[in-house]
Image (cartoon, rainbow, N blue to C red):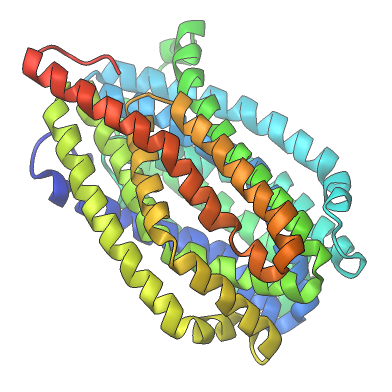
Length: 451
């Protein structure tokens, strides 16, 4: 069912909307974590390193697709907040058309350039073949990834964060079953893990069809709405493409990190892969709060309820900062045990992974700040400053990869994300301060805001 985020207690609405998002992100991450866990435990460290070595170029391509789809959904959320249901239908049609075009281009580029990219990154010879086989299958499965991400973004735009959660739960269970089936029964190696992920994504996307048709009649595309106008496309491209570009900029930073990481050997790649999977799992509540703020701010912007935007920012920052400090303590005292879950008895790799977790955990306050401010600004239609923040993140990650990794080895490389988070916070904080000042002025004047 839909949820109107323009009425009610802001903090309670944000938490209730973010909770299913967090659980959904948890299941989404289980796609990748199941691959890493099963591959690492059944096929060994080299196979795990092969999957991990594709992470940055996977993020580079799929990150653009997912983020641009979410960006298009911001237009949908703004129109839903304004109770413009015909506009919601047109937005869905435009988002689908834009997503299809984006998928075709990215799939072709990813498949064509994956081999030279892996070579450019210096992927170790012993894992290069398996890495290439894995990532090509993932890229061929991009239409499946588009299906679910498009439909789930549309449902979340109108306030339904629970239905995507249920569908993701089904897909996650299927993914785990298929992982074991392909790897242990059919002996397909790392390719089996890729097939399992693509099939599970396809099933999750197909499950959305009957749900959306039955529960959201305003998403039913009529013959007239199939004729997407240039104006509709421009309205969505204006937000979707910069948001996709932001993610690709961040991914380019990850590519430089991967390049530096590959120089340190397969053991370092495995340790970094395992620790990043843990890192992504436990920082998802922060990302979920940020995603909730994007929809919350977009709906309230559409409804011109400016006071609620300001209250939502304050509440979400308090929650995110508190959680980030708690997780930092967990990493410091229990990170070794978390790393061992993925790396088993490889004590050297476990120790390296724990080093990463301790450094990241101490820097989570920057990540919390970054998530909330970036997503709020995007919900208000401001895509320029988040792009600037992404460029700043790229510069800081590149500095850690090129300079710090040479000076301090694996430990220096562990500072790549913390430095990127801190750097990205600078332009976002300045932009949010100006935005809040503008909101205050408009509230006092009693006019609508044009952010």
